[in-house]
Length: 239
Image (cartoon, rainbow, N blue to C red; front, side, top):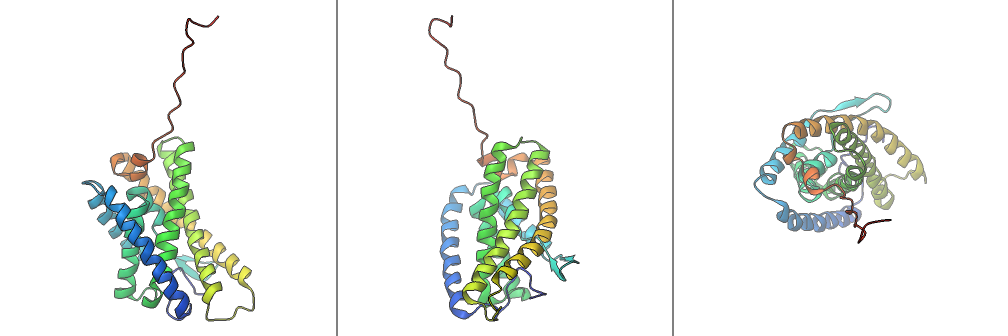
């Protein structure tokens, strides 16, 4: 387990559990396709391609976590959710994971459903929920957007890692002697460090795009700031 990263290799989780999560991932991605089609327009369609390509390129660059003996890379859920929304964003990350598994052997093909569930679905969903909350309470300035991107990226990575813990509890092929809490703590600690790197990359990228073309940041368009209710004048004036 010392060299385990987010991509699950063949044989780590047993076949029945992998099949269940493959069916779950397929069902959720089908919903994403149906909902994502409503969002696609002349801006979002090319942006989705650029986001997928960027995530693919950055995921190929690993940075070492010296305290844990593993390396980490951008998962991309928060970045995709900010730039193209949760539905299209989940599809972008899923496409990257499929290409990596089939072409580069990064993550087992039989484990694709597990990896897609963790990184494309759980990671993107957790990120967008936080984005929706933070953009309503933080100022829509570069600093506020940077904090939103950093926090959502960091949390999404940790949530994705705990998805693996759940899957391992359901069908892990190695007996941990009941030490599931230790596994959860190890995964959370390692991916907290990975999340810091992901948060910095995500914040830098999104703020750069927002400064040049804020209309290309899906979250800024879709999540409108709350408008206070107008004051109702008192008939005849107040005395």
